[in-house]
Amino acid sequence: MNFNLKEVFQPKLFGLLKGGKYNTKTFTSDLIAGIIVGIIALPLAIAFGIASGVTPQQGLITAIVAGFLISFFGGSNFLIGGPTGAFIVIVAGIVAQYGMQGLIIATIMAGVFLVLMGVFKMGVIFKFIPYPIVVGFTSGIALTIFTTQMKDFFGFPLDLEVPAGFIPQWACYFKNIASINWVEMIMSIFCLVICFSWGKVTKKVPGSLIALVIGTLASVLLSRFAGVEFATIGSKFPELAAGLPMPKPVAPEFDFETVKGLVSPAFTIAILCAIESLLAAMVADGATGKKHHANTELIGQGIANIVTPLFGGIPATGALARTMASINNGGKTPVTGIIHAIVLLLIYLFLMPYAIYIPLGCLAAILVQVAYNMSEWRTFKYLLRGDKSDVAVLLLTFFLTVIVDLTVAIEVGVVLAIVLFVRRVMQTSTISVLEGHSVAATEDDEKAAMENTDRLDIPDGVEVYEIDGPFFFGLASRFEELENMKTPGTKVRIIRMRKVPFIDSTGINNLRNLCERTRKRGVTVILSGVTDKVQASLEKFGVDEEIGKDNIFPHIIPALEKATELVK
Image (cartoon, rainbow, N blue to C red; front, side, top):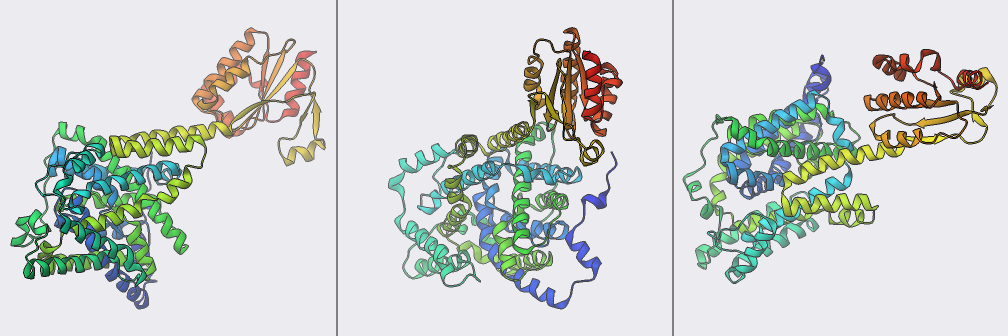
C-alpha cells in the first residue's frame, strides 16, 4: 500500500506560515493568550508530575517539550498540549512497577503507536467510540485521582505507605484516621475554596494559580513567624533545594522482556492520548468553527511522546481546559501553544527554585478541583437514563477503571466499542420477505421511468427476499433463518440486493452455502439488484459461476421474468 505523507501529515503551523496570512495583529493575540495559558499550566504541570509518581520538574519539562512539539506538529489551530490528569493513574502504575526507565520506554512505544495510527488514517475511528465508554473511564479516572490525593489533602504523614488500588487506599485512610494533620487539612480546604470561588472574581487568572501563590505565601509566613510547619515539595523532594538541573537527553535501555511487558500499558497511553486530544480538538472546532486534521494530530502527538521522555518527561496529550483558556483569551493559531511552552521554560529557568516552598496540601486541592471537573457527574447521571446496554457499558467501564485497572478498562472499552458498532450495524441490516403477490419494481428513478410502472406480480412458486444493509458476518444468524423459511411449492428464490452496499467474505460464504443447500432442495437462487461493487466481490470469489451468471441480474424485472420461465 502506498502512503501519501502529505495526505496524512499537514501541520497547521506549516500551512499558516506557508500561506503568508500571519500578521502582527494575530501574533499579538497569540502572545497574550500564550502568556496566560503558560501561567495557567504552571500549577497543573507541577501537580500532575508529583501525582504521577515523578518529580515536579518532570511535569514541567513535559509541559515545555510536549507543549511545543504538539503545537508545532499538530493538526489543530488551538490545541494546547502537556501532561493531563488522565495519565496520572497509568503513569504512577508504570513507575511503581518498572521505574523511570520503564516509563520512558512505554511513552516512546505509545508515541510510535500514535504515529502509526495517524499514518494508517485511524483518526476518524476515534469519533465512533461510544460516549458512555468515554464518560465511564473519564469519571473513573477522576475518582481515582481524588482518592490518590487524600493522603496530602488530609495531611497524613509523608512516610505513610499507601497501597495501590481504590479499596486498599480508602481502607488505609480509615485505618490511619487518627493521624490526620488538622492544620494541613485546613490549608487544603482553604486552597480548595480559592480554586472553586476565584472564578466569581475573574476568569482571566485561574483560581489554581491564586491558590498556589496564596497557599505558598501562607506556608512560608506561618512557618517563619508562628512555627507551623507544612509538608512541601521541598520536604518530599529535598534534593530540589540545591536547584534544578537542566534537562539532559536520556538514552533508554531497551530489553525484550521489558518491552513485551509494557506493550499493554503503552497501548493504553496511546488510546488515552488519541481520545483526549481528538475530543479536545473537536470541542475547539465547535467553539471556533475551524476544522482540525485528525491524522496529523495523531502523528504530532506521537512525535511529542517519542521525544519528551528522552528529556525525562512523562506522557502528554491535548488538554481541553488549557485549550479553551487559549481560545477564550484570544488565541488564534498554534503559535499560542509555542509561546505557552516558552513561558513555562522561562519559569523553569528562573522561578522553579521557589517551588520547594509550595505546600503539598495546596497541590492536592488543585488536583481535587481537576478531578471534580473531569468527573462529568452531571453527564454520568444523565446517561443513566439511557437504554440498558448503554448504562451497562457506562457502569462496567467506570467500575473497571476504579476497582480493577485503567489498562483493563481501556482494553475492555475498545472491545465494547467494536461490539457496539457491530451491533448497531447489524440493526441496520435486515432480511425481509416481500409478502403478497406484488413487489416494487423500481431499482432506481431511471428504471421507474423506463418501465412506467410501480409494481409487478410475483408468480406462484417464487419467493422474494430483500436484504437491506451491508451483507456481512453480522447477518450470519439471520441468513440461517432465511434458509429455513422455504414454503411448500417454492421453486425459485429471488434474493433482492439493491440496498446492499458491500458484501464481505463471511457474507460470500453464507451466500455460497445457501445456494448449495437450496439446490439440493430443488430450489433455484436468483440474485437481483446486484451493484457493481457486490458483483466484483462475487466474481473475485467465483460465486457468480456457482450461482450461474445468467441468474444474476441488475434489476428485479428481468429476475422475475427468468423466475416465471423456471416455474412454468
